[in-house]
Length: 112
Image 1 (cartoon, rainbow, N blue to C red):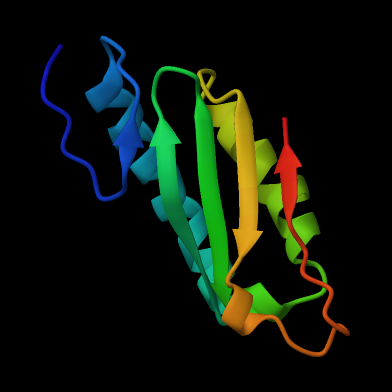
Image 2 (image 1 turned 90 degrees about the vertical axis):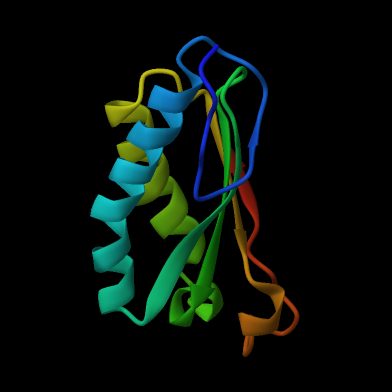
């Protein structure tokens, strides 16, 4: 297996690990400007290249947005799974310190 360099934490082993990481980074680079336009950011907390699980976090304005779960499910999850056939699950979080105004409600979701 070739060495994997990544802008985010990687676990698992796969013969195409480097390509999977590179492809994920490329897709995130496409999604990021759309989220940034609303004052947010999308952070990859980790990826398991063996199981296909990608863990993401919305931060900034998107972290405190009431539709952050819809953004993760309806947008980010769908795009990742359409463009990267090896992605099996997207686990999304929001940055806890960004959540405000929802009576303690913290949107967290796992989309599998």
